[in-house]
Image (cartoon, rainbow, N blue to C red; front, side):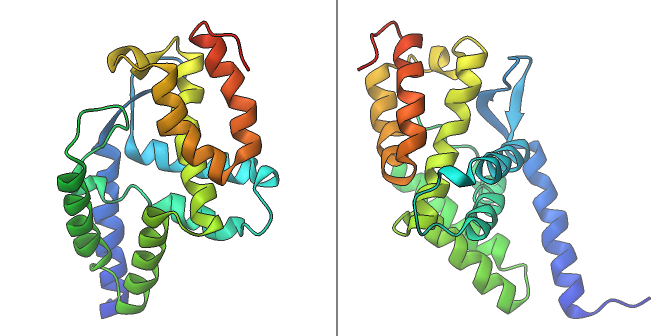
Length: 196
């Protein structure tokens, strides 16, 4: 059965997306048995958003959040993982991710390319309630794993509670304040601080 240019383009994009399974992240699984890959993270963070949707601020459209989270890390196929506690040249990383987004979403038919890229750009800018909730959920997953696995990447990167307050707390307080209020005392307890 012959393909069509549209279907051929979609299949090429999906084949390329499979490479996300080979991108290792700095975060370990909850059981600390190994590092997770970026595709696993994308699935799990999307499941987090679906499960925790009832805690989203008013006005968040969860279907849009799920779509954002499903595609938010595809750029790591070309640009690699960017751990939030790592020493990274932010400008260079952002440029690499923009180039990756151009290439990867450019594999799709024009209408899908435009829609996917717009969702990715919205997530990156984090100016809308949907993107802010998506960013908050994205920040939640690694602390949850680290709380379960004895500290994981926090030990690897010598992370402090103050760093978590800034790098995790700021986007979570903006996009999912109820979830941050739940998480913050658990982080404080892990780091040996009395929760406020």
